[in-house]
Length: 335
Image 1 (cartoon, helix red, strand yellow):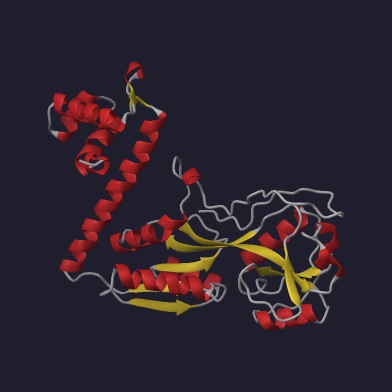
Image 2 (cartoon, rainbow, N blue to C red):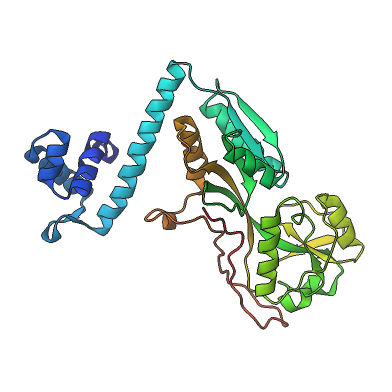
């Protein structure tokens, strides 16, 4: 019998009952089984895993291994419950189409991946996509006219729950014959009053404000410009030598352009699934769980935190003009 065979839902329920009730006896009373059944099963589980889940000398306090087991047990049982509820809804023909919003800033690849996963998971439940500006989409979520949305962060509001599914690095776009193009990374001082923020001013003001704040924190004052969402026009202006611009690392560049990181920071642009915190749709929750799983990291497992674009310090050779080493989080979403 494999290790997985011992982590059945019954044992997970026993384990969580002890955690929540505080003792084997109280857990047994809650589950209507004998105390010996609880203690024997959890003892066997500890023997099989070769770990100690409870520090019994201190009132059933969880060990480090027990804390991880608690996370696994809670998420597994919750996922099982959502799965069963979704199965019953399919059987009862009560599943309704998913009303799904997205903003123009969302990359086609991310939107396609989300759509394909939904079709794979719930092939008989239609998705009804709808595009709009970020604030417009959020208002439709609040009003109950949309069930979920795929948006570029940040998303502000205590009434929203955000699940990051994609993170892409932000770089500086410049001519490949620019003097700075020979640098491995661009010092912030060289971008002061020379780099513009084109795409967020009108259609995603929260993102624009966050970018201005980030620039200010590393000593950069953005160069004034008229907003536009046309990335080709932005690249043309850069190519003509009018300014520098931020650009996603995966964006295809016009001939004659190059993208470089800013020294001392690792900024990302994050995309996330947004739902209202009072969402009680089990099929939607199951779908989001499938989307988020590949993105989840071990560091996020022990505790639940607000979604933050976590910057990662990398080892690299500094440019001669580099004097500062700023480490910045990017688009922070609050809920």
